[in-house]
Image 1 (cartoon, rainbow, N blue to C red):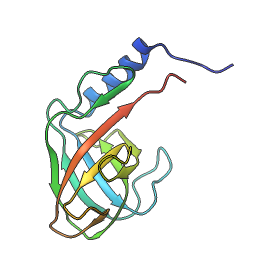
Image 2 (cartoon, one colour; image 1 turned 90 degrees about the vertical axis):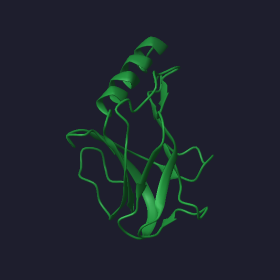
Image 3 (spheres, rainbow, N blue to C red; image 1 turned 60 degrees about the vertical axis):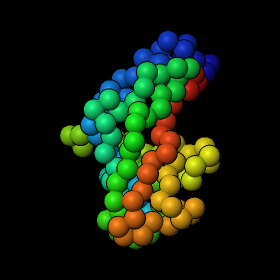
Image 4 (cartoon, helix red, strand yellow; image 1 turned 180 degrees about the vertical axis):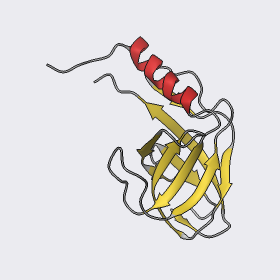
Length: 135
């Protein structure tokens, strides 16, 4: 039997995660996404600060970032995955990274229309979502 969540419970979970990420960060790394509960791997390319209210209230189990989120690249490489972490760096989640309209968890625009990030590039997070599926 598959566990399924009603929309109210999906939204509650997503809102909790969104609140935990207030004033946190979206980090973009090169390489492959690590397994859950393990430290990031690869090279940190850019760290983007989330606002004091990081995510809007969830609807249908999905919340989107609020406001402008950007950072200046600290290294050169090809974006491989995204990490979202809280301000205390005690909780985090990994997700996909892609270009705008790619459907990735975190979509970025660095002005080059590629996932190649160059040292000192300004990287804008155009879209970031947190999703809790029903099952």
